[in-house]
Length: 321
Image: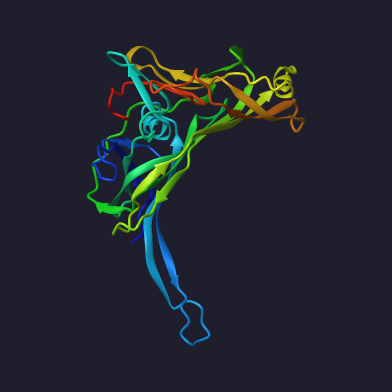
């Protein structure tokens, strides 16, 4: 019999040792999930006196790729935020706790690894050693704050299906956002994107194992887009003069111990394009930007970072990292 997609769920937990699978400690509501084991097949093309090309396929390295996404929930988004940036400082004696994430610049500069659990009604599979390679956030005044995440992991292994327990925290509507450009409040943002990328490379060595020796995280880059109601030339001028303003997208809701926040901050953003659009009944300005590394956005590990992402929620210190 077919199995219902709606019974799917995803879980995650931080690892103490890279690649050593652990049971899910949190469960992430997702609207899209695409796990894929990647088996490399090596062609045997040795001439054997026949007019053919491939005689066999030999199993090569094996790892996995993961993609998932959905609505941003201010506590469960913390694994992807910490996993792509690496440096995390948590403050607060009680809820709400504040988690500030930036690029990790000490030691091997490697972010934490996680075990991702995918339940798809038939059984559950664990993907140990997950290293995040991308976190994209999208927002608009008439929709929910949404995310998409990508990463590499070790090949999947069947596991017992966990009993999920989901957060009671709700997604954030985009109209809750407070936007600042160059430190000045702006009411003109129609929609935007904020994407953090860092390449993850599977290091396949001759070590007697089909699994990668390591999944190695490279340097971080941040870029995005904004669509603004064009009431003046301020942002066009920022583009033409290469002004590099700070950008803040701050989404929050609730009060007291139930207060939550997702704040995206980049102190130095270069506009790479600004296009005036007359496709609607009002004029828009579409801006493409790249966040530049700076010392202001650095975390506890020092150095430089192109952004700082701050979360506020009831998650205690030591959970994400």
